[in-house]
Length: 63
Image (cartoon, rainbow, N blue to C red):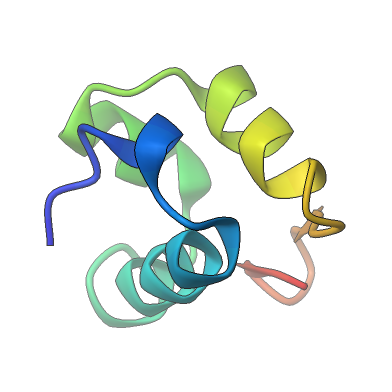
């Protein structure tokens, strides 16, 4: 799944995809995810925050 158009995605689906990528492909490192997909980290966090999700570094996922 390509995250290049994350701004247009449903935030619940986006959270699920990002968490899957964090878990399966990037060892929980959000910086690696945004660098790989060349997306703005602050914009991704803001999009997910608008739906009530926040990144929990200790859990290495959005909740």
